[in-house]
Length: 376
Image (cartoon, rainbow, N blue to C red; front, side, top):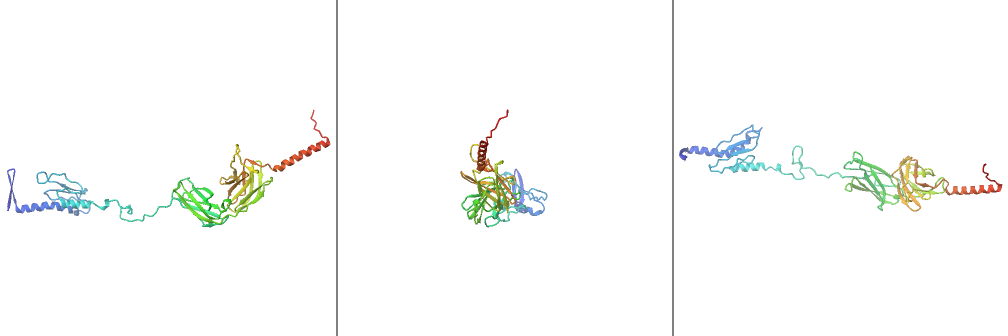
């Protein structure tokens, strides 16, 4: 069977066999591109398909897109731009669907929070979320202590902030502050401090709390320990060279002597230690005091074996007495408390002796007729 077609005065004769071959070629243009990538295992294929012609494969191309040239206008199809990429032109719906489905890979979707992409790009590994390290921790070496025991408080921090210290506040069962300390953090993000349980502020038995803060309230932690209470029996000792006495308590040591130094306006306390401890001393204002020029209270100056001790605290202040709590380390032998006034050596007794001596001299002079003659 022959088919005749006339175009611009030209007659085209096509046999039925030729028409069948032409149909096969047209169908092949839609099927071959889908399997074009199976022709090469070491490179990506680039396929260009033109309507009415066979596809051409290129094993040396590096562009993975499929290009389809659309039929020209006037051939029964509207003219459309060529499609470049993984999506082919609209002239072949079957190929278009396959390419579109292939490019909608779940690898391009954002993984859920419990999926983590590792260094090799594997996003399908489930990992444990875990919990972040606390900003600061605190602990004690024991859960309970007795009077005079050493307490070791230690912990860690998540960050190291150079010279920024950690603040440690110790409170008794009544909530009153027993001790405040600034603790330096080690470069390895650890810290430790030792305290001695006992003293005037440790008399209450029960649960004591340790609060630490590092850099801000959001970086804090608390722990607690039990304490049996400090049973203080105040000791009274006369101050050498005066007719005054002081009351004191001491942990991990004993006081052997206290004397007044009128030159340095101080009290010098001699002690013997058995460990780190605290001296709590109550001093009458009439014996020693520290005043400013306007008459208000000033702070004392304390030396431990000649070295300034800035860790002492004034824990009680009345109109007649002032009480200091002075920490010391094992081996300390002398604590000096310096004020602005100290009673003169022998105090009132010295004045009485002086008055009596003057009266005696006058009496003897009158009896013996002694007169002082000026020189001429």
